[in-house]
Structures are given as C-alpha cells and as structure tokens.
Amino acid sequence: MARKRRRQPGSGGKPHPKTHGKGSRADRPGIPPVKPRRARAVPRPSPAAGDTPAPALADLRIGHGYDLHRLEPIAPAGPGRPLVIGGVRMESPAGPVAHSDGDVLYHALVDALLGALALPDIGQLFPNDAKENDGRDSADFVKAAVEAVRHAGYRVLNVDATVVLERPKLGPIKGEIRGNIAGLLGLAVERVNVKGKTHERVDAVGEGRAVEAHVVVLLAKV
Ligand SMILES: [Zn+2]
Image 1 (cartoon, helix red, strand yellow):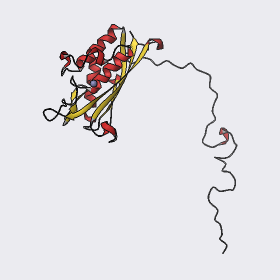
Image 2: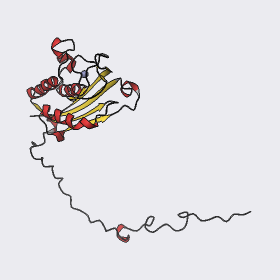
Image 3: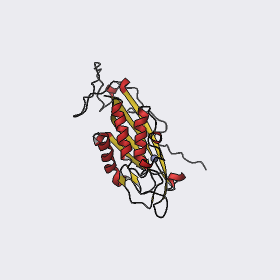
Image 4: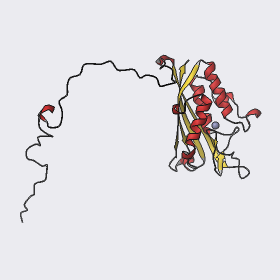
C-alpha cells in the first residue's frame, strides 16, 4: 500500500526569506543598518577609589601555593588537631595531622607569597621539627611572608584561593576567611577570593581523609 508522504516543515521548498535570503541587513525588517564607526582609542580603566594606578607589566610577579594535610580523628581519639581553615575553627570530628595548627589554606597562601618572590618554601623557613612551631598559629607564617613581600619591595594585588574539603562545607565561613586573609595582607576584601569545592567522594580528599588548598597571588613592585 502506497503511503502518502507528508511534507515536513522546513524540508524543501523555497528558503525562508528572513533566514536564508541573500538580502542585506537593511533589507530585513527590524534590523537597523550598521553604520561604519570611526576608530576610537580604547579608554584605560580608571582606578577605583583607594587603588593606586595599574603597575607596569614588568613589575608584576605571580605566585602559586599548594598544600595538603591528612585528616584524622581529633585528639584524644586520634592524632588530628582541631580543623582550622583560613584562621577559622570548624566543627569537625576530624582534623589535620600537622606540627603547627595545620591551617592548609594559610600554608598554601604562604607558599604562594614566597613563591612569587622565588624564596624558599614554608617547610624550609618554618621547619616542622622546630619546637617553636609546635601547634603554632599559622597566621604567624602568613605575617612573616607578608613581611618578606614588603622587604622585597612588593605589594599584594589580589588573592584567589580554592579549598578542597569533602566535609564540613566551607560555604558558611567563606566570608570570615576572606576577611582574615584581607586583614593579614592589608587588602580590601574585594581583592581576596575564596572558593570551596568537594572532591566528588573520590580519592583521599573525596573520602574525607585529607584536605587541600590551592592559592594564586599577584604581586606588584611598590
Ligand atoms: Zn601545611
């Protein structure tokens, strides 16, 4: 039995004048013709209030820092220290195994600052077998790194950080962490970014057995 074929919409026939026609923009209703423009100089962004003028590119230095700590049950149940990230204490049954307070974000921040200056890393400057670093507040390390930045004649322009932690969620304390970093670096909070991610339940971080942090900083010659 022969079937009568239905014509599908859009199959064959004349091209639609609006979509397939060869007419110019001016021929199409609703689309105004494009007027040729005279070339204009690109305006330079004006610095925001409180900002200093943009530095020359040659005076910029970028730094990257990374750190990871194993998470274990907190003492006395295990060898873990209380979980502190970016200077904020978090409620968690597991915490970092570390010689200092084990603040993974501050450690990555220190390495980013020192790295931008091509200085030795945090482990070389603050050995984990030195008695004075036992349980030490990692804000001390950040202060020392900031001092190194000043001493080298640089200032921090901005910080972008990522913490990878399965639990607890970083969201509720991100604002506090940004404030802490901004305070230590003498920056406006808008120049500090902190992101929280999980590791999708895979590998040690995703299984809640470790926490890690990545930090990028940009420095400019004063
Ligand atoms: Zn560390």
